[in-house]
Every structure is written in C-alpha cells, then in structure tokens.
Image 1: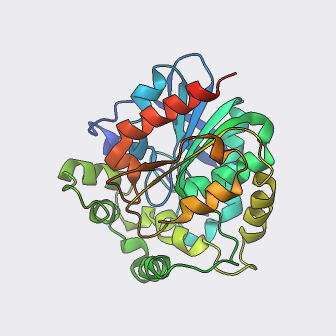
Image 2: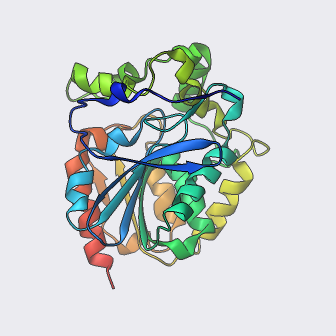
Length: 298
C-alpha cells in the first residue's frame, strides 16, 4: 500500500487560509485538521468531493468567534495523507478515519456542518454516535441507498470522473461550477495544492464511483440504516441548500421530510450559489449557522 504526503510548501501563502495545521494519526495515515476558536462546543465542518478544508476558509473565522471549529481533510485530500491506489478507498475507510478523528479529539456537543460526501459520511456517523452530536446542518448533501432514482447529472459526472480518472483538474472543475463570477486563478491553484501530480489524485478520482447506485454496493446498507435512525432524530436540524446545484438540487426536500425537527427551523435557501455553496456564500452560511446555534442553545 502506497501512502503519499503532499509537501508542506504546496500550502504556503494560500489566500484566506492562514490557519495553523494540526495532525492526528489514525491507523496508517496522518489526518490534518483546522482547529480554531473559543473554548466552547465544537462546529465540525466536513468537506466533500473533490475539495478540502480550504472550502470552509470563509466560514471558519466568524464561527470561531464563539465556537471551536474543527475542519478536517479526509484521507486523499488537503494536507491529509493520500493512498496511491483507488482500491484503497472505500466508504468504510473514510467512515472509520472520521470516527477515529472524532474519538481521538474527544469531540462532544458537536454541531455538524456537512456538504456532499461530508454529509453522506457525517450524517451516518451522527446517526451511529448521536451522543456526541448536539445539532446538524445539512448543506447540499445526500444519503444514497442505491434504491432511489439517480439523476442524469450525477450519472454524467460519475462517467466523466471514471473517464478522466487521476487526470481530473480539480481547481478548474470547481471553477466551472461557479456561474456568478470568475474564480480567481490563485483560488483555483489553492484547490489544486494538495495534488502535486496525478499520483496524488486517487481519492478524488474514485469518490464519485463510491456513491451507491445499487443496494448491494458498499455503504448503501449503512446509509439506509442511518436514514432510519435519523427519521427519529429529535435534536435540532437546519437544512441549508443552495438554489443552483445541478447534482443535488431538490434533495433539500428529502431532508426536510426525513428529519422530524427540520420543520422547527426557518426554511432557508442560499440564493445565487451552486454545488460548492461554501465557496460562493461562505459568510452568509456562517451567519445562518451562528443564528441556528443561538436559537437552539439550551
């Protein structure tokens, strides 16, 4: 098994990302995480495909004014270690690494903020470790079981990722999802920073293929069980989807129906943003998360 570590100099002088690095070793890999803010309850920010904690850079400072903010990089992304082979990545591996990080840091009273795969994994973890979680914030995410109809947009993305594989141009891909302005070159470069060359991209290349499109795929059973548990969730939930996501647009209604407490919070849509809404509307989302925490503190 080949394990790669992105050189530190790849992350020097990234715009808006001057957070001190923190590391924890889980099994055979070192995971990086941002750890900022007050001695208070934790906001756990989980990224998805193919981003890293850089996606949360606009949200971390305002959240950290009142909360502790922990934003890890999953294995294969950001400053965390990367397996060299696509076969080394799985739903269970990512799940175990994130649980290991939560337990190693002994995070409790967590407000989970999750998007894309960060939600598929994070919500499943919350369902199975509910004693550690105080509230949930779902941003443009999913809990696929392989039983639902898969959107044409996702299947096209899945086919594209399989075709280009490790040749995926991560920064350019993110830039192409933003319709309201042109993503600056230095921001595109920051999203490319974790990947000095294609050998580092196995995790990004394989993630779309790990989404269950049939009930017998790994992760499908776990996320189906999470749906069942979360359908009885009694803690606060805020659903914050954007209005311009071609992949997961409309899934907000699924989550509003799934969580019994979702209707207790305002029905909010983040306007003028696509799939990577944290990149486009980070300050606005952070303000909504802060307001949600303040409304639901006991």
